[in-house]
Length: 107
Image (cartoon, rainbow, N blue to C red; front, side, top):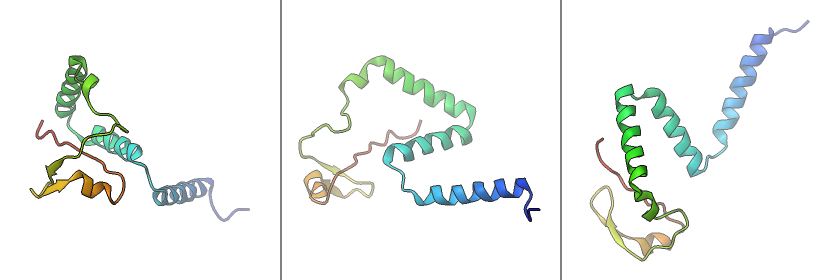
């Protein structure tokens, strides 16, 4: 006779699996997918509708044909960071790969 009910075993198994999953580092795509999924769950319907419509409008415009893609080589550049300090791409690249993010602003 088991000391645990089947539900307890399933719950413990699920808890252990979640703890194990937290220890596995996610790559950028997985993190972005998780962020999108969380936003889809939490954002108000009218906000999601505007976001989805704006995204589709951009895709329909053909603008995506001319955007930089992962792996593209860019010329060196200097941009201001979130704090307003100029940052040179070549300085960042001395330390490894760089991820460049553009913030569109308020929807």
